[in-house]
Length: 310
Image (cartoon, rainbow, N blue to C red; front, side, top):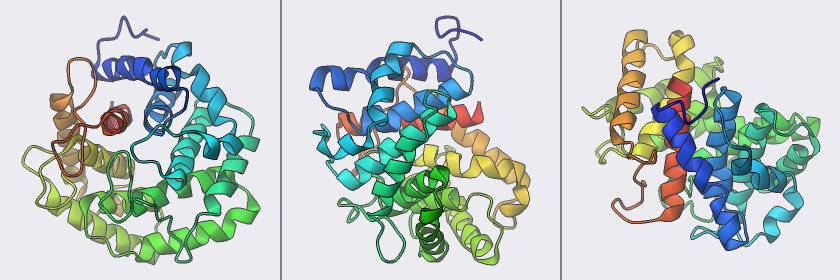
């Protein structure tokens, strides 16, 4: 296995950048954040699972923190977007990825985290957030992306008493009216490879919107006519990549060859937008603002997209 110093790939550069940033926030701010220790940590755990070298110090404190869900609500959050519902979902996502990477073996913390998340579910099956009045962003998610992430944690926990919560969320995902590219990508992610009638119909609607929103550069913005952004593009990549092995689930909205080309073009866009230090300029709403939270989360999402398509 190549070490980061030997590997000059875009993935390794992103991993090296995040390896410095993930532990920096708790060290300097005496709290854990959803952007550093949630989204960005997920990218590092995924890198570990895929065989990349990640320095132990980069994740040591985060790994210990993630195993204490009962303390998450008492954390100062350190966020400009201090939504405790979202924090639970983001930390649970990182916890689940740490387990997949073999960094955590105890099943109890994920079960505890899933119970906390399930308690936040709305009557309609979704997981709305305090920031859900505006379109989602790397650090604020939005309801559709939060519902996908919550579903992932509930499914991974595998607790029988979570079955009804999972069923309600599945029903919401299949029936929600999707109007933006990022919500379409989130719904495709949540549907996975489900092939029931409702899932097939909803996936087609979402893929048609995604297909229509693709820019000549190969990327996507949040809306059909929005400027292309790294986060929105990364999210679409993560939604489309699992369908490469099941192209029949994408057709007829997107045929197999077009699907492959879309993923390759989006990866090329992300590579072209990567900065010298391995990061990406933050995606913000509205565009063009400065935000450390969005910067780190954008880089985490873009790194996940590169790792999925390496």
